[in-house]
Image (tube, rainbow, N blue to C red; front, side):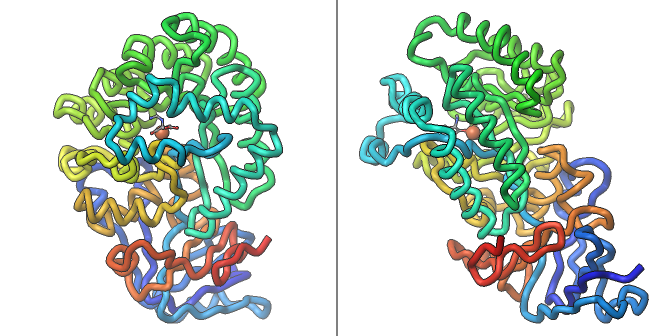
Length: 422
Ligand code: NIG
Ligand code: FE
């Protein structure tokens, strides 16, 4: 079969292995790195990858050939944990943060997530859409082609639904593919202060069935944290969500370890998020239950904490991990997954291969899009991030600079020289 497009002579192509499951433990240390590589594309999908001169049968009279000496290619990056859609911003809390006021104290005082809830409730659909679109544009310009996005700044049906509808419309309109997560259990809203069970009942009995009925989300998530939702409450919500057919995630062990990882393991969640405070018992449970650890190092950085999730220990124990931005207006205001990847090396001491596996193939499993993206296996979407880098180590060594040269989405050039081509 001849290719529509042949991208040739990459210095290196990073090819994660899709073994039919997320890469666990030792598997995360391996990938194929093709020297002088080519990628053949047909109908927006990967046709073949290889080294040197492409096979003559890939070349037809209409095949377009482009040369990429001095560049590297990876599968389009996947940001598998974001809080993309919100009103306002929180720089007014920055001085408190610098003065050392803890994150959970700001929330307990009615700020933090609750301040964003007020702004999101006031924001129109168009306002939320435009703000989120801008964030998605930044992400795409940094090489990201697939993004998970949560609700959770409405905490009432009308606003949660508006957030989920924004995600749905952006998935249809934007070049980036979106995966939607329902997270009304992100905080207890002020009007339910001291009545978290009542709020939980509202989510379980009214919101969750409507989200399902209107097909507004694929995953359900909850913030299992001291002063927010307990492990028992998390179990109650997520078991109901599972019954209704949602896939599960849980924010667990972020600031204190209160049993969220056990809930993830007991209910077979796809992933558990944050895990900064995970215990050895927690690691064992997630490993046994094959729950992916979605680690968010820029949140530790942005909260100005010292403790990063023990990524290396998790890999040594045999877990699968990913890295993601956690992009949100409070604990992690960024849209740059490359910076998170660099923190993976600098602060978690992961190798570039482990990090690249984390943000490609493992992230694809984390959003359950492994059939479509995350590697260069033939038949997957031709989503490609091209870096101005001579080898796969360079984008880690040369940090805090956007090294994206071009991005292809489904075989189409969508980012060129720092600009989106619509
Ligand atoms: O994942 N931890 C809970 N939720 C977000 C923070 C949201 C916010 O501060 O607005 C997180 O870190
Ligand atoms: Fe989060």
